[in-house]
Length: 494
Image 1 (cartoon, one colour):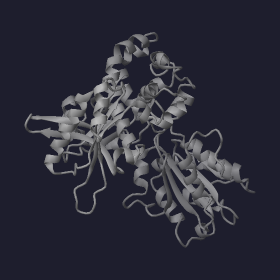
Image 2 (image 1 turned 30 degrees about the vertical axis):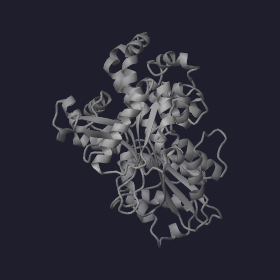
Image 3 (image 1 turned 120 degrees about the horizontal axis):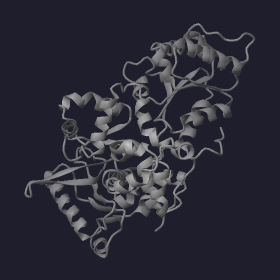
Image 4 (image 1 turned 90 degrees about the vertical axis):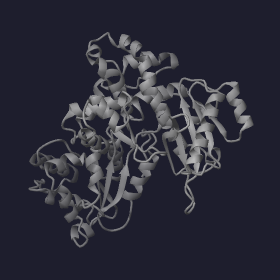
């Protein structure tokens, strides 16, 4: 299947769909596609159906009877049978969908988009599909239908194939359409300046729809245009981006008490990254917020990061940059922003908070992502198994040292896991010898605990503002020191 020329990247996803759809084996097969909203899943699947001559059906939030009428009409228009379809139940509808590939000399893709809407109206639907795909049923064995269920409700889609769910073990494809990483997002937005690219990425992340549909292609023309771009797009009540963060929360089906979930996200955006910190911010017991935290995690809006140096001390971060920006910058002054003409004044007063509460934490996460997914293993010294962060206790000084980037290697047998590297990330600070010395001290503290093998641990300094001469001298004097600038993070030449 030839990928449409207008589709940006998604080479991996298109290849996975191509292998699934064009599989020549006889018998209907099932695939599941999920991902957060606005990532281009619909565009991807609709394009696959068009290229392969398949059937696409986009579900809506409706009563069961109405959805059956809609799919009857859509399938009638697609297949043009002698008699129009009028499905009495979903068993008939699914059999008819499998029938599209019956007797065909090639596989036929069939997509049901926003499947959670249908399952919400009829919870028996996954079991109906399970029965339809029974191993001895003629409707399955005599068909080459490639049935793809797609959804944006991550909490629902994550459970569709898990545990004792009816469809567990039935799917031949489980594809997650992820957001574009920081490098691809810069290419997509057409931003060549890495500093500007990271500033934009800290607000809109890697969601494709935010550039094309929501910002109508409006991209900062250069670093000097960044502030004006924020005012005319994200903080402008006339643009869809202005209310998008609120809609993302409202669209999650499992989030009922919206006020409580907003407060939990607001607590995290204000720097309260632990359960205890969130509970104190909300003046509630930690047990009272356990459920909303779990729901936000399942919905893909909140991410739990384990402390790599201390067990049972996880921290939380908001997974969607636009939601973090909303809670840190927009929500506290929402009434002012809703009134036209106030955006520039609000943004001017919010710049410092943007750097400390949004840009700084986002920069740290990009550094961790780079270490895990982009860094040359030769630069790090080995291939990472996982990358995280944590706090190292200093008993002599009676304090804790935060490590922004901790790269853990693959343990060899029963030996201690190697600590490949530790790093510090500073967005606005010119880094020098003191930062390197701090990392050396932390490396010694970690070695004393005996938890990791620190024999070859490298020291990484990440800076968005650059490095002074003393920091560069450290590189010449100590082979374990590495300086990582924005150009390196974005894979471009300095």
